[in-house]
Structures are given as structure tokens and as C-alpha cells.
Image (cartoon, rainbow, N blue to C red; front, top):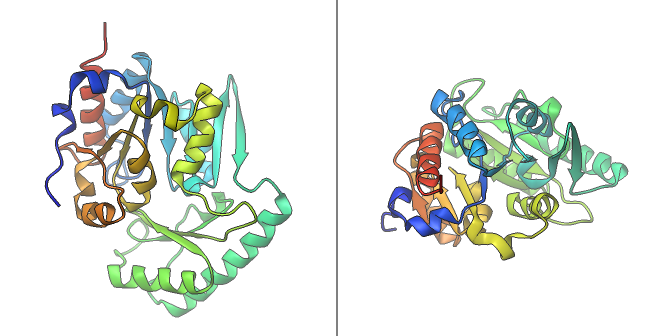
Length: 275
């Protein structure tokens, strides 16, 4: 596909409309497993400038809690849209895609059986260390706790899980998989929509031009497709063809990778804000 325009070159009035900054975490806010100082500074600068901050990640719900305890976020979507935490003053409220605990227990049992089969059949497969903090999905590590898992082995892991009836998604660090319950499918965008209505009183269709979304991988596609200010950090480039084929490519890029690109995008937003 043709090279996408740089976010900093986009129309200033377009960037000036942004009121909500939503973003993936791994290799979008962070870079190679760390939070760059520039990204941390950008988070606080964005919040000070009046932007509402919402993380949208494949990480566990326990990570979502950690993010809200550490940073000035209004909410955090986790587990690729299965769950979210919303700030209520000094307290946090947990939102479930499947509200019935019995349903969650049954789908978790099916998920765990499928994960055990993947571990048994793919020698390179290993579980991510954040699994104890997950409610809905299972995460297979690709790069964080051992040698990089090849794309062929990642595909084998996904094939086993999908053969057991699970839905899979892949980020820069994990293969995630979950079972669907009676409330059906979900993704980052579906839970973000629910959170957005909760936090702002209106959905994405009504304020798509006010949402800037930053991401780096194929599991960000649903958000790229629905936010008019959708921005890929530089390390999204290997995934652009697949995203474009699905009609989910970001509209803009930044030159920086991971959290450095995050800071670059925030700079572009704040440069056109009044005051």
C-alpha cells in the first residue's frame, strides 16, 4: 500500500477537534517492554491540556487496574475488549462483556482446555506471565519471557486454539485467545464504545472526529477503522498490508517507534490546542 501521511502534517483544524486520546499500551505507549520518559511526560501533558485519556489494551484486567492507579486515565479497556475499568472519583468500576459469573467460569474452563492442548502440541508455546491477572482470555508469550516465537509457531498456536473453537488475536507481544459466551463477540472497539458512552455521554459515531487513537498492531484494527484520527506508531508498518486488506489501516503514521511515536503524536495534538 502507499505510504500513509504523517500525523504532524495533517490539517491543524482536524487535530484541534480531538478531545479523547485513546491508545494501545504494548509498543505504542511503551517500547521494548519499558515506558519511555518522553511517553510518560506526554501522558501528563495531554491530561493537563484537557484531553480525556483511555487505554485500550490486550493486557489483563489487573494491568488495567495498575494503569489507572498509576496514571491520570479516565478508563482502561483490557483483554482485547472483554473487560474495562472506569474511574469513579477515588474508586474504580469493573465492566464485564459477560456479566454472569457462571458463564465466565464455563468459558474459562473451555479456554483452559484449549490452552493445554496448544502447550502440548506446539513445543515453542509458553504462557505469558500475566495470565493469573486475566478474567476472559489466555495469553501466549511471543517475546517477553524467552526466545522469540517464530511467526510459523505463532500461527500453529492460533490454529490449535481456533480449532478448539476459540477466537484469537495477536499483538506485538502475545497471542490472545478466548471463548465466546451468550453475549457474542467483542473487540477493542466494542468495549471502547461502551466506555466512551459511560465517560462522555455519547458514542463513537457522534464524536468520531474527537477521538484520536494510537496503535501498533492488527488487534488495533477495529479502533483504527472507527476513529477518524487513527494513528499508527512507526512499528505498525509490518502490519499495514494486513490491516489495509481488512479495511482497518490507520489514517496517519508517526516517525517514532512505540512510546517515542506516542510522544510525537501527542506533540502534534498539543501544538494546535488553544492556549
